[in-house]
Image (cartoon, rainbow, N blue to C red; front, side, top):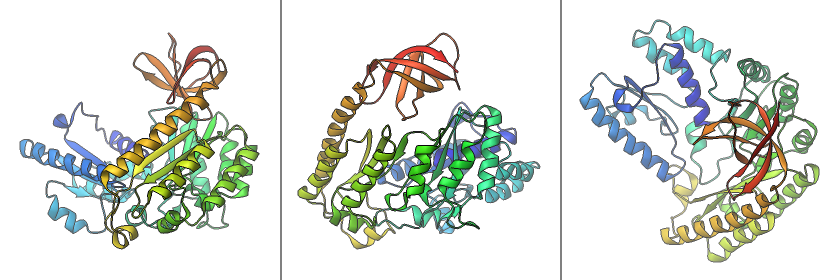
Length: 419
């Protein structure tokens, strides 16, 4: 979501004739888009604000804007703490950015942001574009700060999303990734209650759009109609991110996740039954307050059983203002969190090595996203990262690649033919 919002802000500034500065020291305007989902992320924000404070002393005309989840409702408090910042605005609050730009005497600001807000044309630097479809979250998981910073769920009108995607496709975008803190809740607050399956069906009919993905999902909201739509619609990719967070029922209850391990297990089996070629990713939090060694082993055993393609693991980090931050003491020592973190990472590396080795010798369709260190790269429909060499620029093309080498994190191969 932050990447999507950063791209839109950059596109808007582009429209106002700003140019990207080679470095912070050469910039007239810095927009800091922030994340505070974990302490490490917030520490980076604070460090960068300190750096910018020093830069502003050297260059008093530097304008500093801050947005993202660091910006809470207490704007006045933030201004007192960080006087070097010229303007704070909440995530997605583009009209507020318009007002700031107008006050700076930018005459085209309102026109530019109106274009931006209508989503007629914003520039995607990649053939794969992020498209937010729902903002906020109603779940209030006990560890999560998002509902407090981004608010309750608000869906974008279905036709507005379709219009934006059509505009992106005209630019050359081949793949869209629909975004939401809880994307499966899409549409429940709209007239007629369209759901994510309805939106996928509409987008599937857009000519020249090759692929559709969506994230992040919540196990409580994955419906049978959505599973069937994924299985039926040819442009919807065979990949799903479905966070479990813990493999222990008591921890899941303390996290306020709203499902049991067995319910999650049945959901995975149903998805794999309808979409046998699906690749699955999940999220895990280790060291949640009170997590015992036995409870951690339940999580470890579940990952051994489920054999996910990708596991994103994080150590629990207390977030002030959350339910867990108020209710539970952070009792698991940092060294225990690190040990559990490392055990899961090693387990997943072994599983991913085995799963990816099955692709060796197979030919796979790859949507080329760009070039990195002399090699082209892109992803398969199942979200496998693939690198290959080719003398011609093939960005945005669907290329057939024969896989020759595999690792836990990526595949490498040689080009066949493209489309």
